[in-house]
Image (cartoon, rainbow, N blue to C red):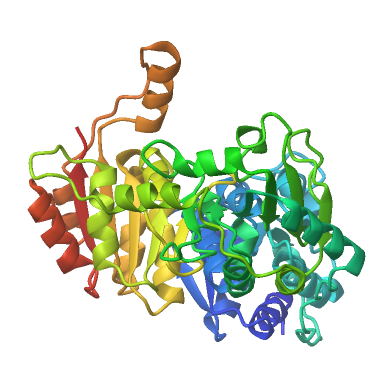
Length: 525
């Protein structure tokens, strides 16, 4: 076999089901090796879409998603999606082609130093220069991508190496390395801080839904009577049906969740990355004791300087911390805040109210099952979803908030629909939608069926909001759009543009449970 065959056999050993990517001349041997394997190669319409698909696959399954691109512009087009996986802690392995090694020492057609280009946005990457290193390189790429905290890795595969004849066997997978249990001294100090606090709060981050920690977290907060505020990426760590849930930072008509964390005298941060939400916003006066629970030590930051760091398996920490805390049920200081949050997110708009993202979400939540997955693109609608959309199970609301890259929703829907049995809905603005709308063709070619909801305000709305808030004026944000109904129908999918709230309800009720691709455009005045 040639080296490309061996690399693909390694992918099979890693359990890879899909490789999302674009073909290229330098990938010829690798593509034909994929054709003859159990791995399904999915040609997409843009490399950024391929990386977003691998990103969302990794977040939903915990197994590294794989994306593939050729050298030069193919590789650089992957970069945004790879960086998104890096900051959102999503396991991803990127593979890029490269020209023959004999021409890389000089200026050459499409040749760039991709390994160094990728270096800031991956946990590890390498150029495979020796066929004997293939099995180790692939195993290392997957091990590091999937190891907590997960992220992206990258392999560059020159075409002359891919064509070489080779003998070898893939390295077998092993159990993932497990963090140790927490040390008793740190647990005791953390439990003492929480027990002494009058108003403790749990801040649930991305790591609380990414790992199997959610069940342990629910047990802890129920036992200890502690409310939970989630980051945007921590939605669902504790079900929003729980009386302990205050939804996410900034939830509530008057920021009731922020009020709770402002009043807190002790914050237990579980799986929290400061890239998710700047701690300056909830700890501006440095007046809270902080317990850091995560797989890695806390970042050094003035506004996030924990009193105790429990660096260990998150589930084990939560289990042992629960055992050191007395059972209590003190709701007096935060229960009214929850009531106002719940009343706000459940309120449906009056018939004569103009369309809004916030008004749409109660209808969407009503038609989606608990296990259905909502993927949010980035924009003003993301803020409403993060703050107003209740989530009842971990990892059922995918929000990009590390890199916060526009364009993730439509390709992310493809990965989600391939990965799960439940229904998938993607929510996007007109700006983010048209960045990767061509992937609708990929979805229809694969026979997938999910619902795309486009909130259309003919504007980069979130930027306009910020400009108006800061200066009283806006510039450079206005857009024009095609007829999105006709655009959708050109791909052969169902489309709808409701004109009343009753029609919004009907359109969602018909589209979400369906197995067909559909697009619903909601014009936002």
